[in-house]
Image 1 (cartoon, rainbow over the protein chains, first blue to last red):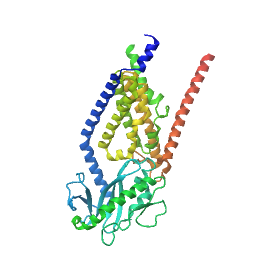
Image 2: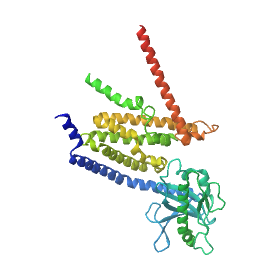
Image 3: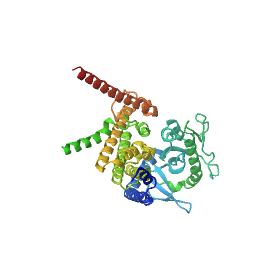
Image 4: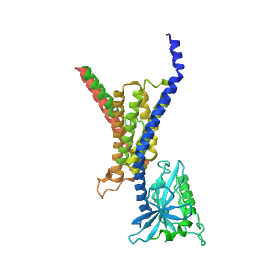
Amino acid sequence: MNQKDNQTSVAAPNSWHMIRAMGGIGLLCGLLIVMTYEATLPIIDQKKAEYLEKAIFVVLPDAASIQPFEWKQSGEFAQAAGVGVPGRLTFAGYDQQNNLVGIAVDARGQGFQDVIRILYGYSFEKQAIIGFVVLESKETPGLGDKIEKDENFLRNFEALDVSLTPDGSTVANPIVAVKNGTKTESWQLDAITGATISSNAIANILQKSTAEWMPALVENKTVFEK
Amino acid sequence: MANSSTEKQSTNDFIRGLWEENPVFVQVLGMCPVLAVSNTATNALAMGLATAFVLMMSSTLVSSLRSFIPKQVRIASFILIIATFVTVTEYIIQAISIELHKALGAFISLIVVNCVILGRSEAFASKNTIGRAFLDAAGMGAGFTFALLCLGAVREILGSGSLFGVPVLGTHFEPWVVMILPSGGFFTLAGWLLFFNWRKEKKKIQEKRAKAALAEV
């Protein structure tokens, strides 16, 4: 076989061999991923439930015990079996004397990179958000991920006003993000410089979630009380 | 004689990645996780072990399938294999600790594009036996983990006054916050690179002097 023949054999490989290699590797990789997923799923679900439970106590710092409630399609809250059960859940927190201290609400929305999942604590007494934790986020490391740890940003959630209109139908002042250092009202979020999109994403998630949940929570406050 | 030669080759395959051709301090590869996830020793160790696991598994599989993969589709095949092991690693890390998974964040997925892994598959695993590919990957993985740990330990000690979360510098120590910020990663890496290059230069000078002394004799 001369040099020309060699070049031809490299330039025109057997198509079947290429398809077989890619298809075979794809099948093998698929099997490996699915097997690992199936094996780890129950453990991951359990760990996620434990992590969520810890986060609830962070956003409701005065709580000593919690009780999950499921929002039914019929428009009412009912006690749920556990933190990790499927369904639209909110979590009521109680102090040592079993007095209701607030509700932890799970919310999610589009961030800069991917969906951001957060948990915030609502106080009936203050009519404000009193705690905030990012549960899942893939925001840009070093920039967008500051929403999880920037102290100035987290200070927004010490008492973020979400009080309702007098008729209780909606939030009086929807949460908005403002340029860093220009916050003047208690319902404004002081954004992070260099992470404007992620800050706005948090404001949008909270705005939508509070508009949906706050009237329902206030209306059903007695359901949560022990 | 043959056994001794094979043994020596195996040791060389392993040691090369760990020290002589350390992927971080010598080849300066895979800088993204090195700088970003080395703010604490725990994160650095976890990222190093995750990368080492993906490196070893993918190199072993690439080597075992090397005669089955045509050259024309090798890169696509390698990426598919690497991405699979990264996904597997991500599930395993989640099953071990959700907090750790959250701390490592997007960097677990980014192991797919770590040039150390694709580089070893292309340059070594696809051309050598399974045993040699595994040893080479284990050496490179250990070297990568060692380098991350070197950075993570220095940054955590100076930036937080602790190592693996245990206070080591006492309460009187005022942490250098800059060390756990991104700029601290660059400072620490520069320090380690300086140290490794200084050692290399020193060794060269010693070898030169020894040669000169030998020539005089």
